[in-house]
Image (cartoon, rainbow, N blue to C red; front, side):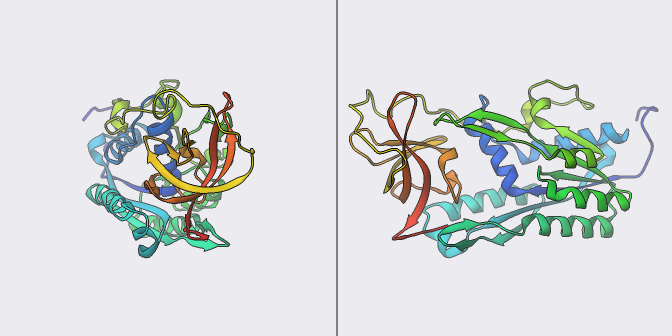
Length: 316
């Protein structure tokens, strides 16, 4: 070990994921960013160990991720079974988390007036993080989150003498309908933590990092393909639609980050960001959906506010 590094016992790290936020960020890199790749759990954990070692001035071999927890709302088994391969994909992701030693915490997603709502995740994460930090005496708690609701947690952890590292992303882009989509991290939360890590800037090489390491390891194998035009050849003349009108239809096909709803002659394009009350990854071909008519910059009809339906009621 270098004599410049602090000689100490293990530096114990606890990692806590806001699962919905992590999924949102991973979707951005997979569907929108030029990388076309999802975030890697294993790569992120290694990156965290390297950053903690640099910030704490200890050998990375003495930095151990001793606890990791993932919190998110989840559909019940009956609803998930009605959505094609959703149960399978849930199991695949659970296997990934399990292989990396991540403990999962799922809250049931409730349906109110046909809309799916996820409530209580922030509170549950905060209570578990504080209790475990107290019991296991973490040196550093890593929050993968962005919400200002975690400010009280960061303050309480500080009273335990625990340093808090915030792994966060900020980005904005214009979606396929021309709408500006913005993701920001609470400035109060950034100010409250010990080690804020602006991952967006680190990945793009816009800030100098404390630790060495390959940013590419933060991503799994890139997914190929994105929407670049009509689904099949040239567009036929666009049918006349009333923008803002709500209609129903059936999903014709799903691609990498976009899909089409049956609507002759061209079918209606929709972007993954247009899915409401659910996640694009949960959709399956043949699913009945409700949507709102809109038009893109070329005057072609597209679908927005796409919501999965069950008969006359939404699944979410």
